[in-house]
Length: 237
Image 1 (cartoon, rainbow, N blue to C red):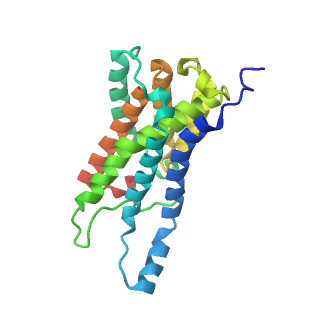
Image 2 (cartoon, rainbow, N blue to C red):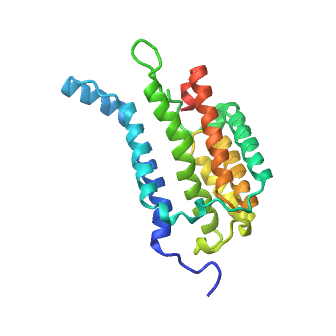
Image 3 (tube, rainbow, N blue to C red):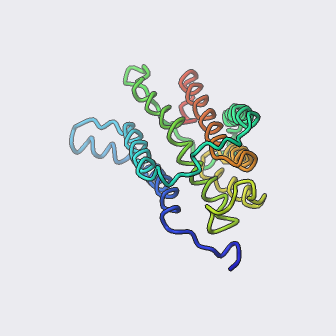
């Protein structure tokens, strides 16, 4: 049996794929909701704040992660992670944030420009509960969910179908590049997304742990959230 022909049990794939799939389904549904929201308001006469769907999205993803928590052995922090890896995770996390807010020219963006997630009320004031939910989801839940899927699963699966048996440091450059490319095009800012994928994927290979890329990803999203709220550049959300 060859290295790449071994098939993993379904549960490890489901544990890493289901949270991500649910998150994407919510994104697809949300992209069609402005028209649906108008129609529902006209039909019922009741205001429906669809921005709170993000809270439902994050709650569902977090719930699935909790259900499968015992399957995520890669979330155990190995003692072999070096201090330099933690420093690099902070440096790269901040660096990806800087790239994210600068690599936003028209050709670097997929699809039509959208207003993004705008957490303001009718008076133009910030609705802080919406902001806190958004930042919590982006900085605490999404990095864990996405790194479990993209780095722990996809980046290793490209090299070896029985991905749990492959050490992160043994992954190929090909797997890193392919994963980063697809990860980039998952996001509207595809070029920034590719650089982010390369940074997080490289950290995963270097440290042989999922936590440095999670920390980097979390810092990127946290800095982005704070910056968006301070500047009102809602289209980055």
